[in-house]
Amino acid sequence: MTAFILRRLAISAILLFFISIIIFLIITLTPGSPYPWGDLNPKISPAIQKAFRKRFHLDEPLYRQYALTMRDLFTSELRSTKDDRPVLQKILERLPATLRLNILSLGLVFTFGILLGIFCAQHYGRAPDTIASIFAFTLIALPSFWISYLITIALVNWFSVPILGTQSYGVVFSNTFQQWLDSFWHLVLPATVLALSGIAAQSRFVRASMAETLKEDYIRTARAKGLPEDTIFYKHALRNSIRPLVTGLGFLLPALLGGSVIIESIFAYPGIGRLGYQAVLDRDYPTLVALNFITAALVLIGNLIADLLYAVVDPRVRLE
Image (cartoon, rainbow, N blue to C red):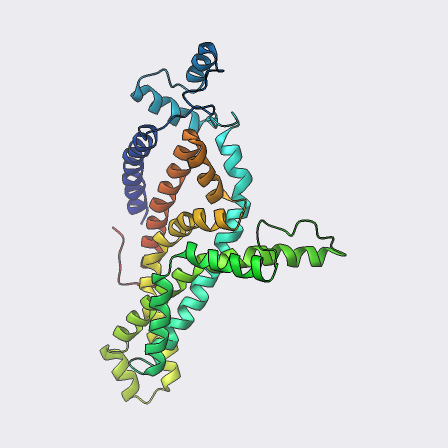
């Protein structure tokens, strides 16, 4: 196990190195200007432009820019071209909000995804399964930004319900509990929209896995022994059907982080996703490099965790 983890960490480090080069080149070579004032502002003197280029290593060759950017990132010295603040500090300020959003979304995905998958497997091939499957495929097909806009239009324009940000502005609360409920309301709505496609996808995984498991020989043997159907379904079939969920775990968290860029922007939620969206608009290259690098690292770490959990839930798998 230790040798496997060390080998995977070494491979992940090498992959992350090449991924960081690709990220840097894509962001840096994108058409446009990293200058906050643009390229054609005549009020900016050449001296100021030269100082800016030197401050952010833009006067260096491309390979030197990459090396200096990675050095500054790992030493917490990487600064935003928009406001000259440390990039990691800006990310850490937004991290708690994104963690709350994604933790709640993960909870909704696994809870309702598993329940919906179990429901479909229990009624496999019958009308309830067909209806639930149509509902799941509809959720997968509908873009999250479209659902978000519909909810925003309906609640804000039609019913004047505050949903943007993390709290209702201009509202005076009589106690802390009311303030907490208001904050929770502003959290649960974007988290639910973010989780919808994940719930549908997880339910498909659970349904397919349980349908295959229920065809296994040991399930027929359990039925031949006279075990109750609920015992067979929940104790034997369900337990052996969670392996696909563990496999998908490595991709779910980065997918939620990527999806939160759209959701946070629409709901004006002050998280990392909205920070990345604003960095794209501002052409804040250091912030974009840092955010994409962190996302890539999360993908690799998630894959490693998924492999380890897979060995835990399935004793037949040996990590060598």
